[in-house]
Length: 127
Image 1 (cartoon, helix red, strand yellow):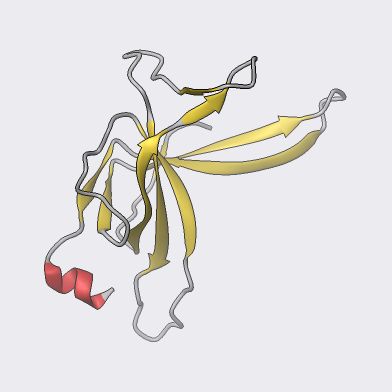
Image 2: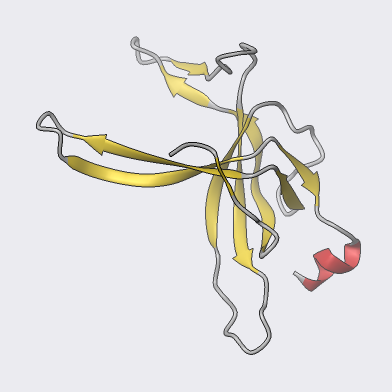
């Protein structure tokens, strides 16, 4: 399944690595930018720490680091430690198969149309 929309408001996201151009290894073993199939512009990735927001009466979740693909450069304002919100976040699934067609691995990856600074300073301070 591709581009499954999800509601991310139950999480706080903090940048752990500033956005960078997404790179891949070409057939010659050299790194090259990953380009958007339609626009031919470089895609970006950002590393975020995703932590569940507290829910009254429940134990606080620990959170984890996730990588989010972005179609364009989100700008210079998103440096390490910045709290952000995801614009139009979606999930995608993948699976890898061996020569016999058996699934050898599977998982999911995150994508968003962009980033925006998280709400007010009070919301960031509560994080």
